[in-house]
Length: 77
Image 1 (cartoon, helix red, strand yellow):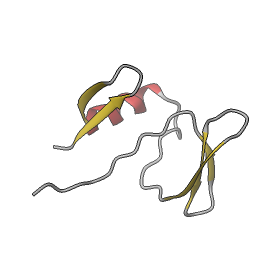
Image 2 (cartoon, one colour; image 1 turned 90 degrees about the vertical axis):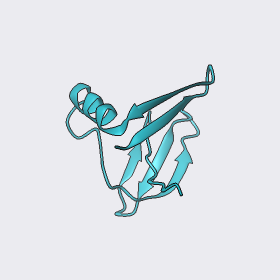
Image 3 (cartoon, one colour; image 1 turned 180 degrees about the vertical axis):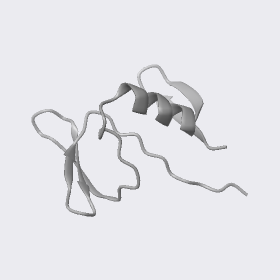
Image 4 (tube, one colour; image 1 turned 90 degrees about the horizontal axis):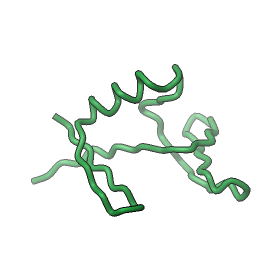
């Protein structure tokens, strides 16, 4: 079971979620093609006009995003 820890900066709130539940919920609510898996991000810049992130992927794709969720696989001893 993979668990994601989300930290909300505004009020310092943190919540643990099962990754599979988060992904299924987002996939059911967002337009097809919105969620991308296995992307290798090589650069992140902030748009000077909107302050939103601009991602450059390994394959040359450039994505302007409002929200970025990232999962890092970590093993604990």
